[in-house]
Image (cartoon, rainbow, N blue to C red; front, side):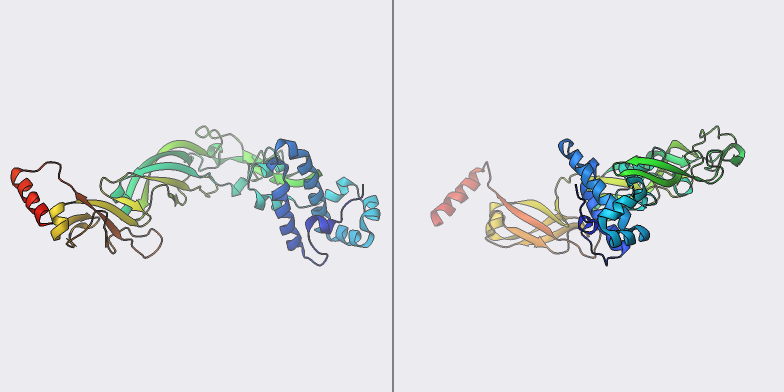
Length: 357
């Protein structure tokens, strides 16, 4: 069956540069990668993925592209086998940008998790419960977490007495040339040596404390600062407080914030809401009354004739926004309470009021 034009496959033009071709391939690779397909569509996705990958391999290679433009599919396919087409093609940078994920690890081989001196510690998650007022005004907390820390005995090298020998597996190069069979053919590429993690040298003897890992897992105390205005279910990233790595590129600590409910206030974004019970006489005649705010008690005026469910607003008495220089308001919903039991005198007064009305 005749192959589709490579430019049509990627949706690019002959005049487009390599960066444009790479972007087009990234978009299609993300869409048609077999790992993203349902079981009944995997075969179709694999076929499409191989097709776009073949087009990318040719159009990003100056020599192959020139010959393809000159001869078209017919003569080009006679000159190049599938293995030749993919030889030298750079897919690693594409997939590293795209996924930072399991496919790229599988694509590079089982040792791809090793990144030598560029290794980074993984992020950690911790759910932290705080009081309502602590969320409003901010607070500093000391928490205890379990994480990887650099081994002090070997200073993260993984080697006893920090003594090394040249890595025999990669002959001191730190990288190895490998072949990987993929849905679109055999790819030859270079990857980090799994034995020395890219250093070109390995420990003469492993550190007895960390067993050559360079890090140990232990419980540590961390001081975290919670900013004023943070809300329930928000995530706070504490840079560099996650798992440590021997390279110094530590992971982050992700704090998942849980805010306890308040007995009086309800929060809606940066505003707070509350209910205020008043007596019938206060609603009818009006009055001045003390109400609770986040900043302390303050006196407000209840106008005469106030109806139940009337909402009063106290400007600027809400919560400071965690990201912007603005503060919410406080809204007070008036609840006129009907007395359930009356004294003899109260009954008499209400009867007189009824006659007047």
